[in-house]
View 1 (tube, rainbow, N blue to C red):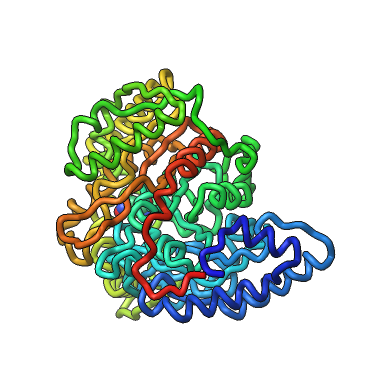
View 2: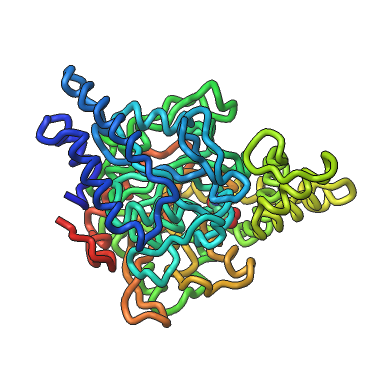
Length: 492
Ligand code: GLN
């Protein structure tokens, strides 16, 4: 039954047509068969999965109904799951066992999901392809020579390869939306503060947000409803009661104004990609939306702003990995040398680059010129979005600057950073945003088509509205169903 959605699985398990244990055994068997090729997982948690499945079956037997009963779940390996290895795909945490479970993970498990493993990512979630992982290679299930995107690339690949219907990812500047676009699935980043970050190993705390990657908008809504809400353990989680989104899914877009960004329309991403987005916007109109032009004049400063703020926060957050409390320790002659040797051996090149940039941007004499200025630019970018939402209800744009590229194709950091051109401004503004499959294009270096994603962005806290609209678009287009992953999947 690979390819079953979370909604279908939960229905069948709640109705006792299938047991959670049966579902999870199938998922483990399928993952065992294909993950050697895909490389979505860093750790499988088979025994834990069986234990959880039995617990779910027990609850169902006692008459409980669970929104995600028996749904196999993959968790990005920067989220704590008690008693399992949580590596951030870094050598520095390669053997670190989480002593507690992240709130978002706990909530989705309480809703009946069953954790089958921890997925690969770019080290500490810094990257857009999973190639910065120090612990494994993940391949795009639609073309094994290509990257799955990143940093939640393992989570996206697991869902695309039908290993699990839901994976949790984290998004700091695009890390849920870009891999979702590359892998022909839905990736949803809620408003900053909607989902607790407690137990998510911090990269850039003012941007990090947990969200689901799924094959359908309906499943994203189910997962979001399970994980959202105030958490006393995360002081930035918001005290705005989350609205249930699953009952807000719509079939048309009548009465909606959807903003098309003037500055983005002036840029070409290549003829076939441009055509895919034009067709997507036309479809939004056909579904009843009115398209309006909006301006985001400062969005172009998004990358420069993000690549000061995110490294600044990461340089501070990653200071805790010093060989004393967590993970790897390489002994030196004294304390300072132990720090140096541990960090030199434990962190990969991209992480070191960001720590250096961030430390520089925060240092006295440069703080005002870089960090403070970036904060001001961030405020301007957020204000641009606020103005745009004065005349539209949602903003549509590309999710990524290109379809999935080949492993090794982007050798300099800047060309990798450019992948997140469209997602980063949204993250700086803290807005809820998702990527939904919106068509197929043939990259110049491919014989076949690869998927592209439509990014839809809503005002703060408008998750219900955002998922509702994305559902209408998904249902009318069905782009996700056009091609099967390029694997011997044995889809039934
Ligand atoms: N690709 C971006 C970066 O490298 C975003 C990563 C993320 O969202 N975690 O920082």
